[in-house]
Image (cartoon, rainbow over all chains, first blue to last red; front, side, top):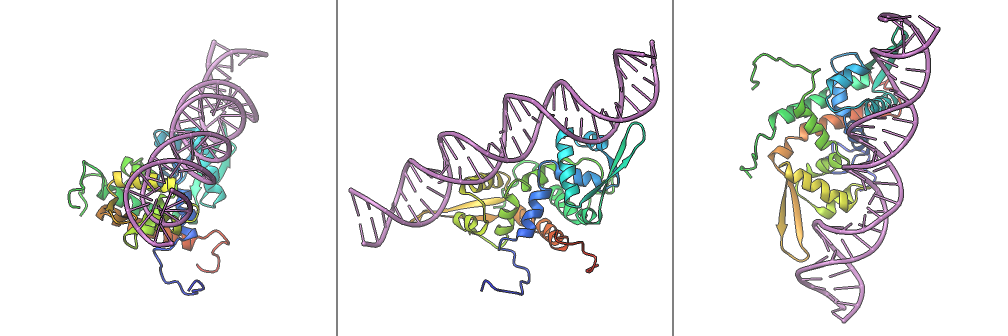
Length: 119
Length: 119
DNA sequence: CGACCTAACTTACGACTCGTAAGCGACCGT
DNA sequence: ACGGTCGCTTACGAGTCGTAAGTTAGGTCG
């Protein structure tokens, strides 16, 4: 029972892969950062400006995490002042489907008032 | 289906709806809780048992948040001992696509090695 | 030639959130 | 009466976050 080698698609059981993923991209601001990066390469200050409430401290922290996970890459251009661009890797771009799915849900079920009438 | 006005699909800009959604379902353990609830109605203790590391304190907190958002409903059966079942609402079930998208990504891009063989 | 500017961080610290453990209330079997 | 179960709730130290200030490396301005 426990040594099942063929797991088709068990939804109920705990999946460590899913858990790792959702705890990573679900960290505070990470979703917004990833969504903002879908459009292409961005700079540090672009992200700060694009995401209201996000501070440079947290952005720096999140970008490091995402870089460590192989989701974004950091390109340094030693110009003046220093220009640094962040780009999604293939792995990061693959998150687009998941981000769009969440976006679609958010738009479809936006809480206008209390639509819990249907029970 | 889409109320096409003037914005086709802006991905880059900050979307408060997406942000609210991702910060909600991305809270610690919430993803795992929702995934575990996709299988149907569950009890408090089932969730604690199914999700390693999740404590009853946090589960209680998360379930309250999800209930407040209209994502889960709480049914009380005054048996002995009290039996309480949590079920996803229609809004909660609508998250299935998003959860599956994250699961698919997690399985496709699991960290161990670069998928230079698969693709 | 030195005060000031920029981009991208880093440090410091109080506030908020989480993890661990313990307690509570209603009921029941012994 | 005593201990056991379920679903919480409270307490408190540890961890994470928000806000503000400092740092580095170079350039502009007066």
